[in-house]
Length: 344
Ligand SMILES: NC(=O)c1ccc[n+]([C@@H]2O[C@H](COP(=O)([O-])OP(=O)(O)OC[C@H]3O[C@@H](n4cnc5c(N)ncnc54)[C@H](O)[C@@H]3O)[C@@H](O)[C@H]2O)c1
Image (cartoon, rainbow, N blue to C red; front, side, top):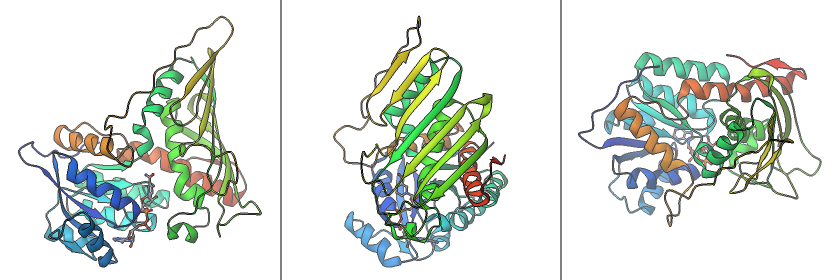
């Protein structure tokens, strides 16, 4: 992957597309980062963008109902794509085709074919395209990753996700909201923690009788990963009890023992007989005392560094495609009722 860099002689101009929940979390990050300037905000419902900008005291910020209008008028170096997943492809490709780099919210796209065409558009334009997987920046995940690396060759990784949640209205339009919208966080974390990539998957996506979602809000998935590692996922967004963290509850097992993570600040190990294992401290929040959606500032910093130096940030599109493939293959398996190969 190669992408053009931008010299360090001026702030990077950023436009946010999408003024819903997560767009409102990204805007303060562009305002606070010393190397970026927020130069526009688009939303198909233009009044949302205006209200969101005004709520931050940005009365003069240009807003538009069309991302393309701002791509041409505001001359951004990058956009942050905070639209609903169904719009990710259209908005991201429109930016890349105009030579504008992209940070997109997860998931990269709705289908694998769409995602591949987005990566091809980034290659063609030689622009940086990265997907923000904010969990990658959690201090707890970093500590768990280091701890799991000490387990020796891995055999099994599992994560459970149990949250009672009713979120943005677009979730009610999805056939499999848990797998289509949320599971990417856990699947991407499984790749990060295990250092493996997906090979095949068997998935069931279903509704418990008491669910408040029109679609299938619960799922189990069993992945074969490279090296023969098995990763299993169990999750529900209609979970009435024993909630996990928003990054689940984890266990990994290798030849030297097992390691658990509560998805928050607690990592623990249980060594095999005769072994000793190291646990790594969960590091402090690098932005203490600031109310923020965790991981966005870190993702922005890596993205800016990438645009300045050519060093790819985490979530760079070629790598993130492997995580998105876990989602689309899990959906294919759930629909077909059989194990399927994860596409490359
Ligand atoms: N990283 C996280 O933990 C996290 C948390 C929440 C949401 N998200 C992701 O962020 C994205 C948005 O989620 P949300 O909760 O903010 O949704 P939302 O419904 O609150 O906001 C989405 C906004 O996008 C606008 N929009 C839709 N199509 C558009 C288009 N073509 N051009 C411009 N604007 C358009 C809508 O009008 C709406 O204002 C989703 O992909 C979601 O998965 C990530």
